[in-house]
Length: 172
Image 1 (spheres, helix red, strand yellow):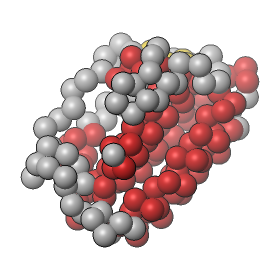
Image 2 (spheres, rainbow, N blue to C red):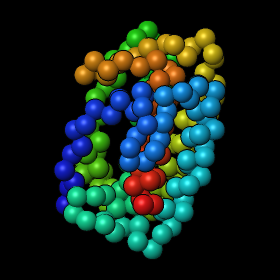
Image 3 (cartoon, one colour):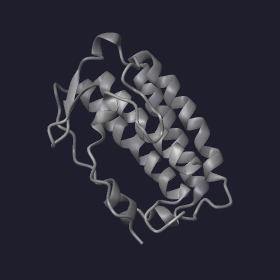
Image 4 (cartoon, helix red, strand yellow):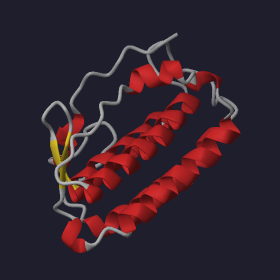
């Protein structure tokens, strides 16, 4: 059963603390993003090895497996966006419907061991990509079709909230 899509614009997490998970990305510098990503990636294998990995806590909340598959895809999408920002001047990002992807890719039916391997690989590759960003590229820009604009640095801070929040979702 699909989850009701989340239609919130989460860009406010760039300015203030998330009242749910406690993440405050407002002052995180580019240089800290790779290590914060790696720390988050290290937490996900334990989630994917839980006995209840396929169990939804209720009809409107993803299971730990579904959240993990989503985080894996977040890492992949943001790697593409980061690469685009570094290669082009002020690119517009392709739209990504995370809820449609969850249904189309059948997140709930995926193999937790494969999701774990793919999530770790994608997350570490993204951390490495952020680590290679030269300081002078931190202010390069990109934008979503809804008009939200990001610098490389703010994209990293915005990205960090997603896996941190979802780790909180599956552990609280």
